[in-house]
Image (cartoon, rainbow, N blue to C red):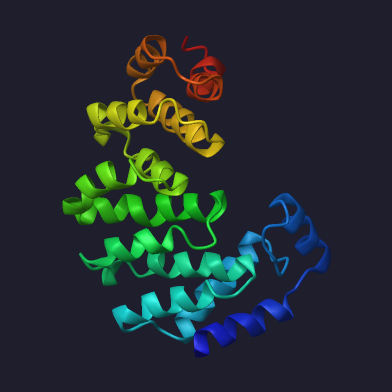
Length: 226
């Protein structure tokens, strides 16, 4: 596809060898990188969709599939960026595709980007999928789907469903994976900025892992709310 070829050419022209090595090392050697820092990478992303407008909904899926076949992490991020950029093209049946997308080349950077920039807004636009997210994803064997089910309310603030948040966490409170435990602490820490009493009571009443508890209380301790 022309848009993918354009990305390849621009990434090559702006390659930073030393930065690429540092990025690969930071990501535990799991992915290759062109060594573009975020401002430059997103400058190229924006230019790509401006020069090659995505006019058909199916092209969003096609492009996401194509870039996820490539080894460089820069491409994987673009596969999410186009969904963030083209919110007007979202459809009710995209949820199943998102279930595929979140698992592709999955690691915390793309997963969290997808959750915060796509999934959170998508569920507000198509709330009919919320039950699947809360039940199927939260009970999934995939740590990334579990993480998504816990974190998608991260920025909802006063619109957070407290009972739902509580149940989603309690369902996975004994999970041993680092990324699940970190998600529990992160969402509680963020919600403590809106409702510190709820979070403090929840932490005191439930046996969170040390990691989750530490993360949950971090903001309140820094602001001397405790």
